[in-house]
Amino acid sequence: MPSILEYKCPNCGGVLHFDPGVQTMKCPSCGTELEMESVEAYAEAMEYTAQDELDWVRHSSHWQEGESSHLSVYTCQSCGGEIIQEETDIASSCPFCGNPVINTGKVSGSLRPDLIIPFKYDKKAAKEAYLHHCDKDFVPKIFLTPEHIDEIKGVYVPFWLYDARADASMRYRATRTRSWREGNYQVTETSHYLLIRDGSLAYDAVPADASTKMDDVLMESIEPYDLSEAVEFNPGYLSGYLANRYDIDASQCEERANERIRNSTLSAFRATTAAYGTAMLEHSAIRLKEGTAHYALLPVWLLVTTYNGKKYTFAMNGQTGRIVGDLPSENSEVVKNFALRSVQTAAVCYGAYLLFSLLNSMGVFR
Image 1: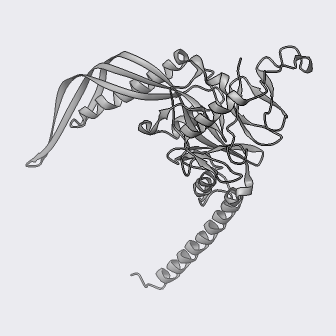
Image 2 (image 1 turned 180 degrees about the vertical axis):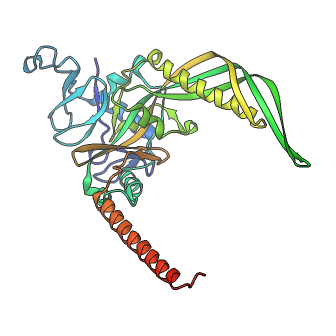
Image 3 (image 1 turned 45 degrees about the horizontal axis):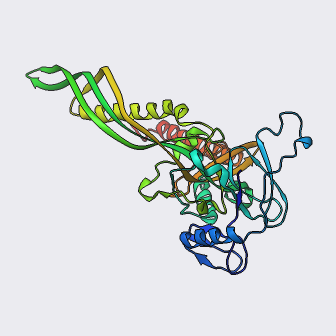
């Protein structure tokens, strides 16, 4: 039976959050900071003194047939409010008291992540990165106001990380060209080569996001992550953030990982032909071996804003601070100013033309 987990402060009873600034659990009420190991020990000790055991409650009578199949309803341990989670939600917050809650049943057994990279950047840093990203000449100035942000949330996104070895064989038709002068003639000599390349490449932690809720292009654009900073999964890192479990299994993500490995292998072998003028790939064979997949949660800040009825989504790597997101390409104010400058420039050019014609008729340029 799944259970709901809240990390309570041993001093004041408030709910602990993971603070990326100090990389510890911190109570927003009294400021107490605790290492992850201490929090886990305290939480385990409290389990033995708990008087109530909460079970999941399903109110199927309140939903249309099939409507609640992907939803779970349970009671907040802090205020008693009713919380509804989607099937893939791991961590969320109570809509009544705002306290973070973690569904431990969705991170246990085969659903337990192998690794997690904790957040290094907080919400304030995400807002600052967004404003810097939007500080461009052709972006409406309203994007530079924090109040324009409709939603900002820190999310642990599920990823599959693939390790593999690629044995590859490539064949290219290449040329080298040199030129020189002989008297009145320009001589060009082109030499043709058959290039054969064989080798192996090792790939570690090739990521593929495992959530249908996330845009693949957006998630790949904020890479890379530094996997050397990944730690063994502990649910405490989820406190204060949202988190989803995977809804695309490892076998379904393999095709995307294979494509990334293939493209990287082709690029690596292509680099070995740089000494030639041209190199046309004639044949390629890539064989993947020793493939393994690891389940990880990686930190992402998502910011959403609306302009002229269109929604704009920005994503920031919660570990490195890299931010991406489309911006509106048209700005009526900028276009108007550009048109005005164009008219002014045209007027100046036409005036210069008239002056030139006048001076030329006077014989100044003869």
